Amino acid sequence: MVLSKRFSKDIGSMLPSVEEAKDAEEEEEGARSSVGGISSRPPSRPLPSLSRGSVDNKIVQRSASARSRNKGDIDNDIMEVSESKEEAVEETPEQCCEDLAGSKESEEDCDTDLEIEEAKEAYDPSGKARYLSACQVFGVVPVSYFLRHMGDSNLVMRHHGLGAQAAKPIALSLVTNTSIVSLNLSDNWLEGDGAAAIAEMLKENCYISELHLCDNRLGLKGAKALSTMLVENVTLQKVYLSGNEFDDRAAPCFSDALMNNQKVECMDLSHNKFGDGSGEILGAAIAENTGMLEMNLSWNQFRGKEAVAIAKGLGANIFLKVLDLSYNGFGNDGASALGEALKINNVLEELNISNNRISLQGAVRFALCLKENKTLKVLKMARNPMQSEGCFAILKSIQANSESAIESLDFSDIVVNKQFDDLHAVVKTTVPNLTVKLGGNSDMFKRTFPKADQIQKVRKYAKENNLQLSELFSQTDEQIQITYEDFKQKLTVGGIRMPEEEIQQLIDFLDKDKTGFVDFSAAVQSIDVPGSSASLRGLQMEGLRFPLTSARRRGGNRRAVM
Image 1 (cartoon, one colour):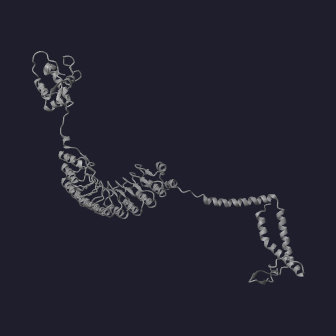
Image 2 (cartoon, rainbow, N blue to C red):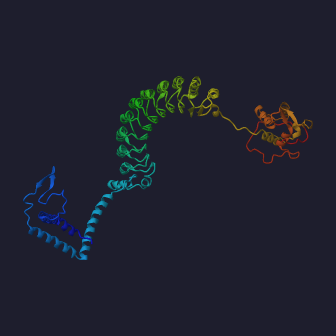
């Protein structure tokens, strides 16, 4: 029978009285044993009148208060215990059920408390829930494209028109995102506030290694936020910040980042407004940086001494492999400084200085220094006003440098002459892997005219003068082959005046095997004589005139030469 909890508590409270009753019974047995009866108590157990505990086998007498209980009190305790047992036995099944129900409810309450602790929200690696709640806080509409692609490793969200406000929930959700490795938010008008939100996120996120924030008008505020982030971040490897209106005031921010961050391997600062004052700051940072492998500073305003400072920074750097300085204003002084840098730099492999106002003088000074470089593989100097002579000087320096590693030269939009072509052919024999991209040869700009078909010329002349084949070639001459001179003489006697070049083209056509003779039968077939009358069906060339003179008629009808 299952007893209720209430009954158990009552029994527990009465247990001490029951034990005391047992002690009283034992005392009575002890008294009987003293009279002479046989005691069942083990000899090692002390008498009830003595204490149950012992110290060093010494028996301690019980206190007088413990023995003051009389037999009447013990009997009353026994009566109470028996009554409580009878009440428990007399308890109805309904009451037992109620007690069980109450115990189950208490147990359920305990289980519910445990479940509440276990019902914590599961970790969301994508950050979707966090993004949705952040959108409500900032009052923006969630971007469905972002929700669909939060689990991608490469997230591209260019041209979405997010703005700074919509970028904040995205930044908050990406703090805990573990999927995205490359983040592209180019052309979203993030401005400084949006850049600050992204920068704060990247201080915590340790998974994103590639960041694209091009064309976002980040300005000075964005430059400061990104610079602070780059000093702390150790996971970013590629940072693209093209077209963000960074000017000379932002140069110190990126200088700090370049000096203190050695993890970023590629940085794009092109299409900005770095100019006066920026070259010296960034040049010193480039010299100190020990982690950058690729840097793009094209489409800025580095000129004069600023360009020279950038070149000096390149000379001191020992890690940079690719440098793009195109579309600046380096000029001849900048080109000369770059040449001096290449003398001592033994790491750079690709240099782009296209469209930098480098004239023939600057190209020659650069070429003289290029003779000592052993690592540069790709050189781009397109659209510089150095003319064919400047290209010739560059190619000549490569020929003179037996240890040159140059594999590709880009002289796009620069017209070269025959002298350069001849040198290129010679260098090609010693450096067969060298490729040169040219803007064209000067011969291509000469005025040329399409060469007319010489057979058609003869046909037209024969038609206009109603000539027959026998007038040009007598029956005795109708041999299989005739010499070139005889053929030319026959044309002259027949009154056909053609330039020497055109006659040679006609001979080449008739003597395709280069035997030194004109195949007469092939000439007849080419001229196409159906019968004895001249026939130029479908071969008339409208609007075309040839410098042919009329032949004298020698009597009788002549067969037309087709």
